[in-house]
Image 1 (cartoon, rainbow, N blue to C red):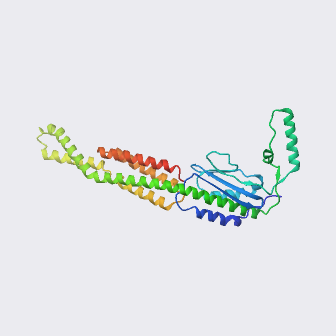
Image 2: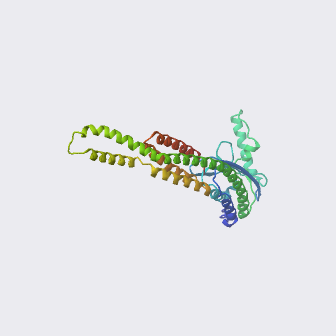
Image 3: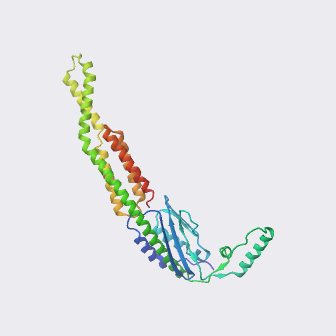
Length: 328
């Protein structure tokens, strides 16, 4: 008899409730949670472990009796977790997202399959007397040894969805707590960037004035001697030409546009942090643009203060991008 298609209505509301419950706040991609509950096939334990990944990497390994619930489990998890490495099956340690589904009560023994396995084990032991016999646990883990009673698939889906939903709720609460700490760090980085940008903006008029004075002085010294003997060009004309060149150079070295863009990007980062949700990729894009502006600021450096500011900005932005690797 073929498997019936899972009833979407049975777990739709569980999926929506889980999804809505986790959409507030910045979330880390690392976390841990467990949940337990009763199903028509017996008692179930769900365990979630999370680590970083560029995309949602979801692999399910469910026991045979829960195999028919895999589409539902996959949809429920995918609705609540947008990025991260997520493996579903028996947890064997290691830093990865995993889902452990364990049933302990309603299964029976397939006598024929068990007899065949034991007979095969005896044959193996005859050929390799030093081999270690399988334990009861090892035998029960083999496909086909345990049999399960007929159950209503919709009822099973609904029960499993509740347990998985409870695990996801605790899992995302754990990720949001870590995400809140990361958001606080990013907010401090934004404060630092704003302080550096404000200091540069305050110094720009003085930097431009000093730059003009130095350039005018050097050009006067360089051109004065050459043009002093040219009767067709007056010293006033030479001075006007020098001022034009100095002004043009000062405009090329102006960083007002870069400063305004950095301020805009910082405001966008704060808005995204306040909005919450799956913000990692958006924040990564904004910090890339911030890094671009910091590089431009450094290339236009006309004073040691601007060089120091560009270095400080790049260091702070690099720290932000490092933290963003942990945000969903």
